[in-house]
Image (cartoon, rainbow, N blue to C red; front, top):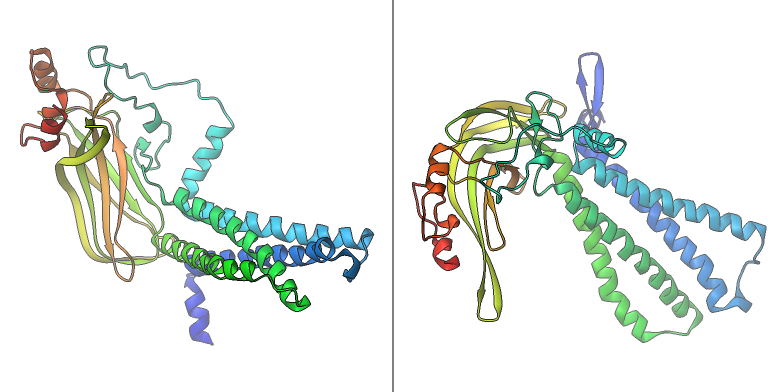
Length: 371
């Protein structure tokens, strides 16, 4: 028994903190069971009166509506609890606070960084500077946050299982009454298999996201200019054993073109540089791993670019290899403005498209396709 207690909670001086991983999974299981119980009981109560009103074992009255109200509250509380758990896991506390503040106020103050008139294809950086950091000036938003994927998966699982519970109650009532609907029974077998798979996938995703925790990247200034140095702060939370954790600076070129009647879209990484890497260490709950490194955009680098058929995107990419967990990659967009070398090259007449001048160190294959 003491071993189980130590596994569920950890002593920190005079305080005891519970396991965040076990707590989130247990909370999701509790609210999910409450939701399924409410849906199943409500379906059984209503179908008994709808399918065979003469054989119903209850009378519609004050007591009936009280039971319906209680079961409906089970459905609402259980579904809202599962969604709340999924939302809390996918986003850090600072991120949720920033989202709440931005929803309650109108941002009338913009960064006083002018958009260069000579480069109208530069993407806007307004969405990257509206979240202040705790260590450096700005906290970069993740381009592929796991919270939205988990939230969408949870909503799908709730709706799918709610319908599955109703169909299961109808099929079971038919079996008990001797009026077997074979088509519904045959349809229900694969449907319930998908229900079980969706529950397993949601719990597995909650287990992974709660164990790994959020990844945050902060930067001292934005937008970025070539040939200048910037400080980058990396923070990784969770309760995991890390085999390797690295931070990369990458540049991707996107090309959209027509090939006959088809529209092709290709992405190629044309530049990458490792900024930081550490191997074989552990991250404890409530004590995130934090580090800082220096970032420098090459002087002859192509700036961020966005047009109808071509785009150049710069990223800060966090890649991790974990023990007993799948590998993960989280990308944070940055905007690079034209430097002196790039600006001088842009003013010279050239025959090749802008996407072919990505970087002086290499030539992009995609530029040949787009040309």
